Image (tube, rainbow, N blue to C red; front, side, top):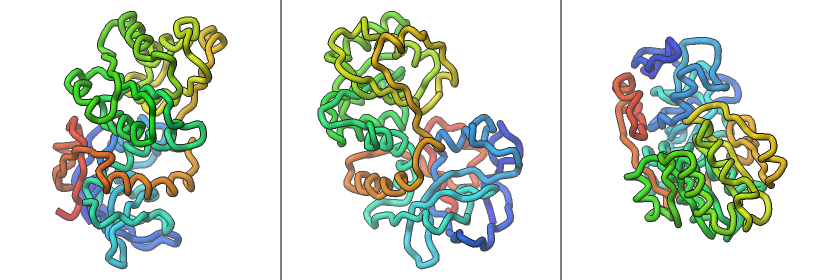
Amino acid sequence: MKAAVVTEYGQPPRYADFDDPGEREGYQLVTMLAAGVHQIVRSLASGNHYGSGDELPIIPGVDGVARLADGSRAYVGGAPDPYGTLAEYTIVPQGFSIPVPEALDSATAAGILNPAMSSWMPISGAGGLEPGETILVVGATGTSGRLAVQLAKARGAGRVIAAGRNAAVLEQLPELGADVVVDLSQDRDQTIAALRDAAGDGINLVLDYVWGPVAETVLESLRRSSLPRQAGLVRYCQIGALAGRNISLDAALLRSSNIQISGSGAGSIDPAALLRELPKLLELATNGVINIDVKQIPLSSISQEWDSPERLVVLPQS
């Protein structure tokens, strides 16, 4: 079969032949219709993600929409190494196939679920966003961040604060549900002041897609002495690390402020809970509550398009 094949970490995958996955107990063979090139897909293929394996070659791709043996379409994932979803065919666990509504096209479903799930789990799970609460989305100008803004509003957030660096996208975020936007491209002191001003009576939940020095700035803005009206716990959820994998954190900040830091990603989320939430996201996408722009490309263009800034969805059968 044809597939996107990673033969060297740090290099774009090649369009090449790869052995068919064949049959395996507990798995089903599926025909891939669409697969998203998400941030995590690129990170895994770079070899720098904590989930990257040691053996090459591999086929990247963590999820997508496939045609099952009975002819139906389903959202699938969980292909075992060395297989992934950026291929004409793959194998996925028998229990990981969620029906895709007829009204939702394959490319949109393949492109939207992974980035949407990154915020939906911390928003909807235990300790998530309660109706009327205030949420801060850090990295709101990226695809996942924009979806987080939409999902927070759909969940009933009382106030959505969207923080990011892309000025053009920041201007669009109020249309998606942001009540106030904060420009993270300002210097540190200006950013801290802007975040404190935006916080108003306090922040309940923070979704952080960037980490690194940006997180240091955001956490400083949440220091209790600087937010006298802050009532209750600030739940800080670390999701992505686009600005860096490490931070320097003042111990006194944690001791003097009511901040709880946790992470959301593979390993911290119950797989069963994840599967239960997927149909809800598919329904939200079908009804237009959440939207995403994707660029559809044939599998044969994977090498040339791999580093595109656009949200890519590969169509393996085209």
